[in-house]
Amino acid sequence: MTNKNGWGNLYLVFVFALLYAPILYLMYYSFNSAGNMHEFEGFTWEWYAEVFQDTRLIIIVINTLVIALLSSTIATMIGIIGALAIDRIRRRRLKDTVLSLNNVLIVSPDVIIGASFLILFTMIGIKLGFASVLISHIAFSIPITVLMILPRLQEMSPSLIDAARDLGASRRDVLSKVILPFIKPGIFAGFFMAFTYSLDDFAVTFFVTGNGYSTLSVEIYSRARQGVALSINALSTLIFLFTVMLVVGYYMINRRATNKPRREEPIAVGGPR
Image (cartoon, rainbow, N blue to C red):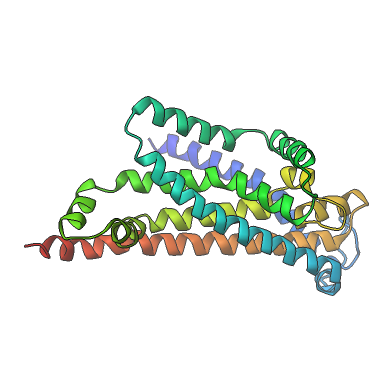
């Protein structure tokens, strides 16, 4: 048994080392005063200062955050409606079909999705830029939010809704005071997942961005093609640290939200008695 655990731990160490070694290498040389990624000469903040002094880059960062916030918020709202609609489907085969169609959009190659949106926007005359990027990010974020919210709906006991209706609650009250508070962890999970997907997306965004508008992922790609610049390392490091903060914040909120019903459960049981 100990031998199996040892091999399992060794495998995990290997996988994490393979995943994080390039990131740590990139972060390490973002402090290199030599200006290259071959020999570390000395520690410097020069490349981080260059990032914050680049006005165009700051505008692109703002564009990326605006797109991520808007798309994740709208996608979460639509995802709540979609999850509620799927949960109310009684026919098993129809529900499985709808879920399969939702999941196909998640596993579909980003290149196919991006090319499809490019053709769609060209056909209907939408100019490539802010609107095209926002619509695309909302579209590929909706299946993610549905997938995060639906399991919480399925965990909810129908007796909660029946009890609320017996006490005279309207449909609006049932939704706002029973269903939404119960599925709040799933809503937060869907929002954070959609937000991070929007921040990190490159393939779809690359197809639907126009001249004069860009996001961080596309900008980093275009700069990297011009040659190695340690300002890219500094920018990538900042994005990575920001993503880590988002993940930690999500887990803290999710943990607090999932523990809250357990503390309130004795009160809920004792109330009707």
